[in-house]
Length: 191
Ligand code: SF4
Ligand code: SF4
Ligand code: SF4
Image (cartoon, rainbow, N blue to C red; front, top):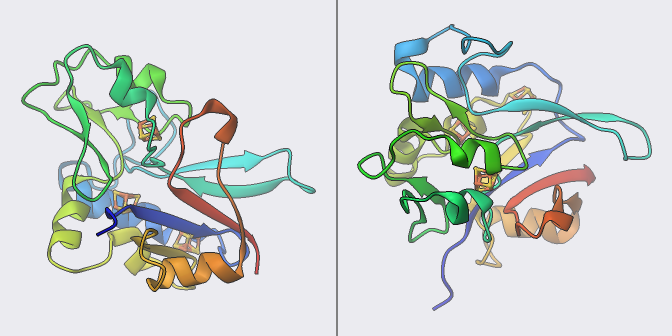
C-alpha cells in the first residue's frame, strides 16, 4: 500500500484575506496565547504567515505555513534528531529530544518555525491542537474555519481524496522547489 502523505492546499484564487484561519490556528494550538502576538514579531501566535509572491504575473498575497517537506532542512539540521517524519508524512518535533537550540528555525527556507516564548521550543504547523483534530477524524482548524473553502487538507498519495481531485483539475504551484525541499503544500493559482 502507498504510504500516506498528508498535505495542505491553499487556494489563492478564493482567499479573501479575512484571517479567520490565522485566528483559528491561534485559538486551537496556542490557548495559552490567545489574541497575543509573538514577542518581537508583528503577528499573532499562529502557524500561518502572509507573504507576497513577487515573481507571479502580478504580485499576489498568499498565506503559508510549514510545507511538510519530504526532504526537510529542519530534519537534517537538528543535531539531536528531534525532528522526524511521522507515519502520515508530517514533519514533527519531539519535545523530549529538543533542547531549543533553534537551528531548525534558522534552517527553514519558508520561515515556518518560530520560538514559543513560554516553552522556548520551536513551533510550527501542525500544532498539537490540530494533530488531535486530525487524529479524531476532523479537519485542521484553519481548513474548518475558512468561510470560502480556500483551504484543503488530505492525502495526496490517494488519487481519490478531495485534495488530489482538486489538484488534478486546478493549476497549482509549490513554493521554493529549487531549494530541493520537496514541499507538500500546494498553492492554487488558477481554477
Ligand atoms: S493546520 Fe492547524 S496548525 Fe497548521 S496552520 Fe492550520 S490551524 Fe495552524
Ligand atoms: S517548511 Fe520548514 S519547518 Fe516545515 S518541514 Fe520544511 S523546512 Fe521543516
Ligand atoms: S480563512 Fe480562508 S479566506 Fe480567510 S484568510 Fe484564511 S484562507 Fe483566506
